Length: 298
Ligand code: PSU
Ligand code: MN
View (cartoon, rainbow, N blue to C red):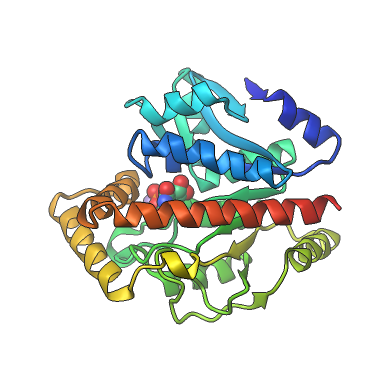
């Protein structure tokens, strides 16, 4: 059971630009009602750039590509929403349940229907205590076998960023910095990790085409740093993160619960400051993703 919204279907048929958006950031990444408001504003940004937004999620067993306003409100408000990585899509649909799609599940579904560009906030990655937990996000594995462009502001330093970048290399995921030569660390523009820089959406479109010619079927991860004026100082972020991680360990939270717990704890510890930064970077990613989608449709 798959439903593609009419305007998304039309755009895909006529090779017009579409930008996929994930729903875990709505259901598990930001508090209600701000989450719904932001999701709708992000869609508006994509539209205003001449692209069609397609927010992806599962509602009562139906996989939806291009959720409408009512559905976005529902997934943002409802308490009993599963967090879906790719493997849990059938678990959710078979039982007619509601689930929000993470980067892995969104990329998978978007690619299935022919969408080439996907905007998000941050991707999952290798967790800091990976030696003990073996916690490596499914996002990385899915990006290694999905031919799609993902625009994100890097990954949060709740993760081990050097290991995350190494893992992506091992798995053959090309990372390019959009007007930066450093992998961005979500709230901050800098991580000290070098990546190749590209300076325009046209170059990214060309890289995508070259990759298709070579039949390399992995993702391009476009690392787009948070705009300078919304960046938060490194020391401040580090404090929130280490406090949040400590609380997470103390409560014995593991597995899928870790990322949502840390995100909401950081919002709490920062008095909402982290949320504001998060919103700005997501919007900025939607803009860049729209430009890339346009370049790919030319
Ligand atoms: N990082 C963020 N915000 C998010 C997520 C990650 O800064 O909302 C979400 C994304 O949906 C991502 C998922 O795909 O968390 C990764 O979860 P996990 O670490 O359990 O793989
Ligand atoms: Mn995990």
